[in-house]
Image (cartoon, rainbow, N blue to C red; front, side):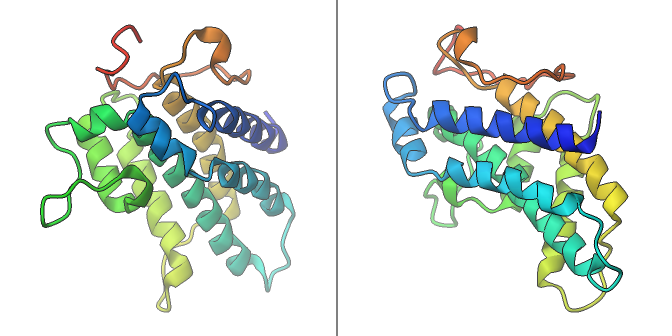
Length: 209
């Protein structure tokens, strides 16, 4: 599949997620709906469209700078997708035996979580499918995204590697979407690429899901 089509599918799916979950009052639990109402899922759509910027071949003197910005773009999308998942499952998250807390014991809401701590939570509590190591993938994206803050040398990979991970993000986005509860299948945002795996987080809020 051409990378342009992959990006278009990412845009379509994130826009569908934005449309449903910013208007989920009456379906999502009150706590989750309140959290989702202040989320900027429209930024997820804008960031998805911004992936098209990196499809242009850069000049040699711009290559590294554009690649660092491209990783930041992809890392922000992955982080936002994880925050959406926890926000939808907020009641389950706050009642989890190992929610993410501050040093004083207060729960940290999903919308202000840092990617590192969120990644550890997902590794322990959500990612049970071993066909693909999502934790290692997110960690790689995180490290390359953080090159935007770097002064000393860091591995930023290549644009070929970046495009491989854009394709992987589409699969990641599909998997996260497959783990979200909807009133029925007609409400679930879709695009045509077959979902390879399924998230195994069991919702107590929506036991029929």
